[in-house]
Image 1 (cartoon, rainbow, N blue to C red):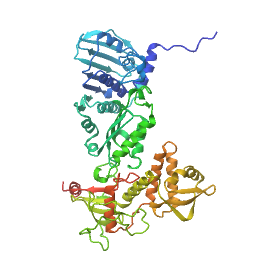
Image 2 (cartoon, rainbow, N blue to C red):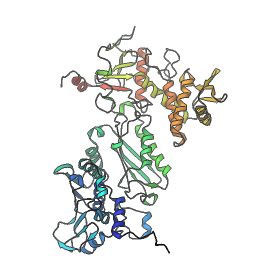
Image 3 (cartoon, one colour):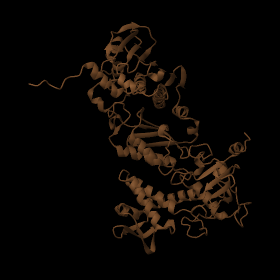
Image 4 (cartoon, one colour):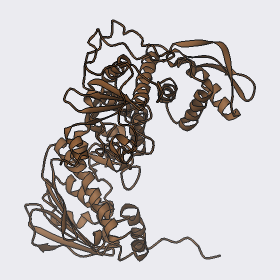
Length: 595
């Protein structure tokens, strides 16, 4: 009989393999040790890192500590104080629960634990490459002190794949920062290679958010609140003008656990999709409280991904809560200042973003900027803009004579409206971007009221397209009809357009349909119907808005400013670009080197 090719691995080897799932780098070890300290009730936690944590990790806390017997058990695999009975595996209310962190670290490093539980004095135990010593009396302050030296010395192959000490140290500090955000009542201190890089006293949550994400985020933050079916969401989300180049500033916390869950990050992206430019990322610090039995944290050894019992409900609540928070007028949103937020400074190397030799301003023919005519509420800007004549303002929607965006002074380059705010600041409005948002919100309001009003074409238009694009449009023909876009097939490579949304005036249907088909291809079936319709509305709005180069009258400019002030999310267009910038006294003095 042939010898068996299957054999049991030695315990030391098996432990080292298992350790690789839990402790993949110094940051993972730091995260596990700090979570243990938080579960132990610590109110002050100090972390010391040398060589980015590869050489040494020291975590000290003032938590409940352990007795000699508990210390001996704590370094055994699957020994934990956090699961009193098997059934609680599906109702986890602590950060840790597997009992793998300490034995995993001890299997690949030199680990020393010293702990005092307040009654039996201090004791210590060491593990080196998986070999455990006996518990011995020691000297130590109340709480627990965990020291890890020579991480991955027992698994040189894993150590060879680590990044530089600097990169590993930054990742470890970031792990502490994320936990610190979730536990603001706990004080944290981190020292990296002799430098103190984090010092946070116990504080309230908003102060902790500003301390970690910066005052710029705090100034641009909008409160987010929602409750539904036992779920509670709270926190701060940055205004659309405060977008970032990466997702680093997205902090999501579920039941006090920092997570990088793809479902929640997707919901965050969907909520901001029409408000920030493509390729940019929103910033937020959001805290979700959910019954422990409604979420499974036992999905991945790192416990940063979750599985929700009602994933659609959680996703929907997050999106709707964010959209409510972001649905504010320009008066409540910090305006785009040159250099104040990413995406604006890069696009404006000269004042106002214009070439140096461009004309700075040009008054409108026949219109005197002083004074702005005082008359009944300004007429609404015609959403279709089929003719240059302003449309009378409905009596049911009064408009203030002057609001936060001020009074129009002139039109620049037939594209930008120059206004003076009540405090004397200059406001520059991109007329196309602003009107695109107004059209978008008007279309959305009609859709929510039962459907966008359609305008039948006198002669149906035939639009030739690729067969794949035709198929995508016809698959969604019923939903597009709710948007006022009535189409039907016209052979294998064409679409017959019978009606267009009335608000759009008379746009060319060919580029409009091409854009809608592209949007449907990008969103696919991954998005819910409401999200796909909203994305399609954004494309419609772009085609139905007043274009750059269109001359506006003084009344039209005033109407545009007043409607922006009364329209939700009017600080950005449907593509996420800013609709206006504001130059106050400080910004002007900086431009002219007065400060």
